Image (cartoon, rainbow, N blue to C red; front, side):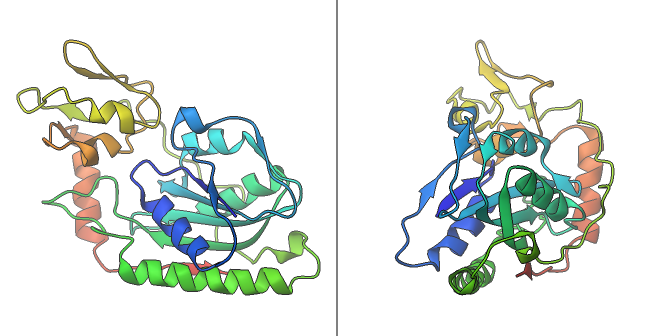
Length: 260
């Protein structure tokens, strides 16, 4: 089993790890696409299982995840595709991820949409805080057991194995990249450098002070969530408005949706 996460804040990795955990007795390896160091041309065979986990950005697969997934190549390789979203909606992300997988000669045989804490979530405006939680991961493990049983029972693997998935083709138009970055609270920053190590696109540099390249920042908020001094914050008015709307309108707990 190969785990293939693009997971800046860890939610997608948690879910696919739980899915794989149910398939006991099978070695598990990881091809982590979160950071540039893990990206490279890689081929998977028909006797391997690939479990792909990515976050949803505004109803689509995160663009940097799309770019990095295109470095993978299957060979009629069975795949499980997982999209993790912040309790609003996953919209076209699963069908987009299915199509990316198929184009690379993977055969999706199961799919899931799970909830993870929204990247804009904070102490004053929580949005799916703490998710995936225990019940989510229990569902993921049970799903993994069902996938393992189905895979063992399959005599042939083809496109018909993929379940019907909700979503639009053509996909809805994604929003343009935000010309914004998290803001630095200079008085709080100790220049520890943790934010540099967690940024998935190497957008952060440290010289006299922390600087974030607006062209490279994907606003995943991994830097904000990892900063021990809370020295990086969401300050841009458009993002604060979206965060407040999500906090007010996306509080009802949504549950994972599974397709097998």
